[in-house]
Image 1 (cartoon, chains in turn purple, blue):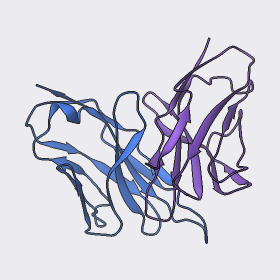
Image 2 (cartoon, chains in turn yellow, orange):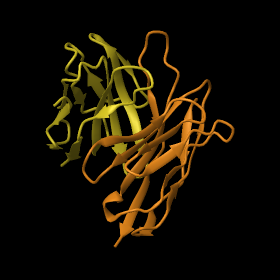
Image 3 (cartoon, chains in turn green, yellow):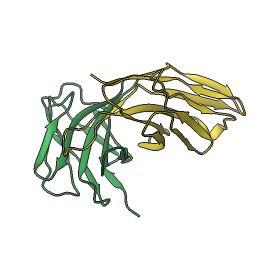
Image 4 (cartoon, rainbow over the protein chains, first blue to last red):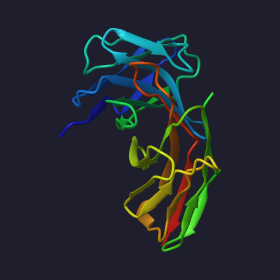
Length: 112
Length: 116
């Protein structure tokens, strides 16, 4: 079955480290997105990509970086510049207007 | 910019009670509207959607009608079950740039707990 796979499910980061969250989809969707979810704040857009080798900043891109070298993959790196990285990170993809998103199951990142 | 406002939770109901979760939006143009559901520790799942005014989306006993005159998309279910306990998000799709993909704008979510 097609879907979006995020890994790992849980991730622990030490202060000053960069970590990379994986997001892979086999839905043949063109667009992919990264959201951050904090309690009581809903979802906030970090980065999105509409085609391979192109991506745009969302509302809270500072301290994050992405790449889109393949249509299937959209990894997110949380850098040491992100001062409060503890959150639940969600990856999503979409194929066309008015279709909505398909979400992965999320990665919970905790700074230790 | 576009925005979505949901009723604040948490909402606690007894099994078989009637559910309404209010959602209103502000948007330019004619957005599509969505309800997503998130179970504990999981990602979001699309529950239902409506793409134009007066459309009714429905799934698993949940319904919502796109009301352009009141800019609303309230979620309803006639008889909730314990398994409906989750967080519900209302969302709209903004008008994409030419050739671009849509971007969804989400409300803050409403936590529903259904007690047996």
